[in-house]
Structure formats: structure tokens, C-alpha cells
Image (cartoon, rainbow, N blue to C red; front, side, top):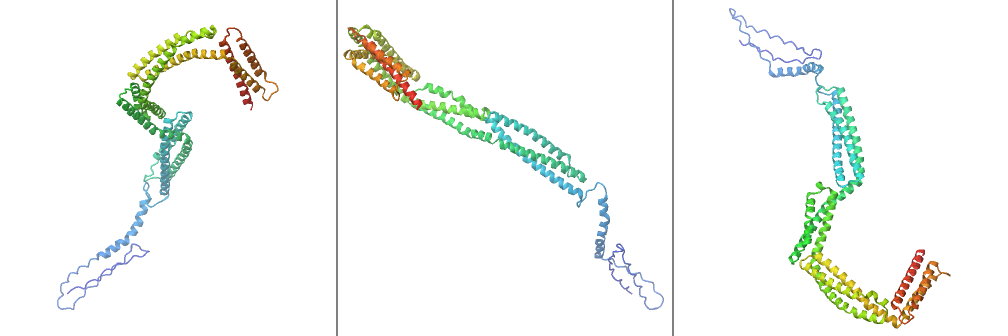
Length: 492
């Protein structure tokens, strides 16, 4: 006989009043007994009770979890030294402190960047400018640097003093960290403003320095190109069989300057490099110009050699005629008319001989291509010949003028009197009486001319004295006329 299976177990949801109660399980139904059929048969074993389903057991566990969490979690947060997982006053203070830390870090970075940029500007100024203004700017930057170090240490100390990542950070510690970091940030900002104002004041100095730096590279390049052009011109001259040793020596002297230019302004300074570059450009340009002109200069020296030799020969011929002129002067006029010309023939001969000697030396210098020596010697020859020409010409001019005044002295007298009358009219223009300082020299000139005319009387008059006196009177009158014109010009 088979036993009747038991009904399946159905879980009962616990009520709110009895969260952990469970409904009693109903008793198993009594086994059915068959009708009596003889002696009592042995009682069969009870059939095994069916196992609860797994779904029912999981449902019970899930329903029990919220209740278990409600009992366990408060204990987890109640213990000392544990971190609040889901917010609270300490977490809010931690967030504010972290925000203050980030803001201070940003301010520190901005200040550091501004200081680096300003340091570059100061270095630019001091590398170019050594004026009092530039020195004051450097001193001001050093003072700001000390101030920046102070606020930077304050910021670093505030960061090191507080660990905002600690699990046991208290609200009071977070608030204190926030306050110190905020103060450090404000100090960094104030110093940043001071730095910005200081940088704005450097505008003129920085502009001037940058202008000079902008000139640096082109100036050095011009110097290099100038040296190259001078070297090329010198090579071209040497190709035309002209040595130009002096130009080569001057160009070689510029080699150390080029070395310093190549070493750069960092080693020798911006101002010194600019000055050196300008000097090299000028000297190299001078060498180049002289080298390019050297063939023309050689041709010019050759032409001057020929010309001065011809002139010396001509003056030698004229100097040989001076004794004849002196002989006529001695024969026709008194000694006062020719006494000062006695040494002209001998002096002219000596000057011509000296000029010819210098010409030979100049030729030797030209052949040796010693151009400065050749030029100097030719200048000496020219001066000697000019002096000789004046002396030789003076003898002939003396004879001509004496012949003219002997023939008609009235022409020289009229010429002088006309100059005096013209000056007198000018002195009286716009006035009833002349100024004494003008009238007196003119009256003296009239008297002096009359005395000179008186010397023409007699058998052997001194015509040369008359001519020199008349010339002196005309010069004196000319000085009075110039004085009158200057005074009236200044008054107008």
C-alpha cells in the first residue's frame, strides 16, 4: 500500500510586527489504515518527507538580507577611526580643502611662469643696456624674486602640512587646510599682480633692448659679407699683377675681429658685438673700395709722374731766364724795386733739382707698389714746384708791373682813388655825417695815397714802393667797406 504524498510547503511572508516569525508547518496527514484482514500486518515505514525546493530557500534568504543589513551597517559606521562612505560634514570639508589646494596650485604655476618670462626680459635688458635705468630694473626684479620665494615657501608649507587623502581626516583639519591654502593662494595672486605691474614698467627698456638684439644678426652678417667682398676685391687686384700688400695687411688685421663676431654676443656682449660689427663693416668697406680703386690709382700715379716731370723741366727752363729779368730790373729801376728778388735764380734751381730727386724716389716707390710712399713723394714734388713757380713768376710779374706804372702811373692812382670814393659814398648813405670809426680810416687812406704819389717825383722814383702803398690803401678801404656792410646787415 502506497502512502499518500504530503502537500508542498508554501513559504509565508513575515509580517511587519514579526519580522522573523514563520508560519507553523501543517502536520502530515495520518496514514490510511486498510480494513482488517486477518492478523495485523507489520506497520510499513513512513515514506520520506519531500525536500523543500531551492527556489523557496533563495526567496527566504533574499527577504532576510535587508533585515540583516539594517542590523550590521549601523555598527560598521558607529566604530571610531572608520571612514564615512556615503558623505558627511568631513567629506564636504575635504572637498573644499581640495578645491583650495587646486586653486593654490594654479596660482603658483601662473606666478612661476610669469617669473620665468620676466627673467628672460631682464636678461635681455641687462645684456644690452648698462644704463642706471637697466640696473634699477635688475635690482627691482631681485627684490620681487625674494618676495616670490617667501610666498612660494608659504604655499609649499601649507601643502606639506595637510594630507587631504587620509581616511581619518577630520572636519576641523580639513577646514584648517582650506583656510591656509586659500591664504597662500591669495598671497600668490597679490605677488603675481606686483610682477605684472613691474613687467609693464619695463616696456621702454625692453623695446630698446629688443631693437638692438634685432640689429645683432644683420649687423654680424653685414660684417661677414663686407670681409668677403674685401677679400674678393683684393684677389681681383692681385690677379692684375698688383700686390696691394698694405691692403692685405689691413684685411688680415680684421681676422681676430671676425673670430670674436663668430663667438657671439653671449661671450662678448651685445653692445660690444654691435660696435665691433660696425667697425669691421667700415674697415672692410674701406679696404674693398681702395682695392677696387687701386688699378685706377696706379694709372693716376703714373700720369702724375709724367706730368710733374714735365713741369719740373719747364720750371727749370723758366728759372734759367730769371737772371735776365733781374738784369733788366737792375738796369732800369732803383735797388728797392728788385732787391728782394736777388735769391730767386739760385733758389729756383735748388727747388727744381730737389723736385727731380723726389720724382725719382716716387718712381721707385711706384715700381715697388708702395702706393702710400709714392703718393706722399708726389705731393712733396708738387709743393716744391708750386713754390718755384711762384718765385719765378714773381720776377716776371715785377718787371711787367713796374713797366706799366713807369709808363702811366695815373692808372694806378685813379684805381685807388675810385676805391676810396666808393667807400666814402657807402659810409654816407642814409646819414648826414659818417661814423667816426668809418670816416677816420678812409681819411687816413686818402693821406697815405697822396704821400705815395709824392714819391713818384724825382729822377729815379721808387715805383715799387708806390705800387705796394697803393695796394695797401685799397686793402684798408676794403676792410672799412666790409665793416659797414656787416653792421648794417646786423641792424636790418
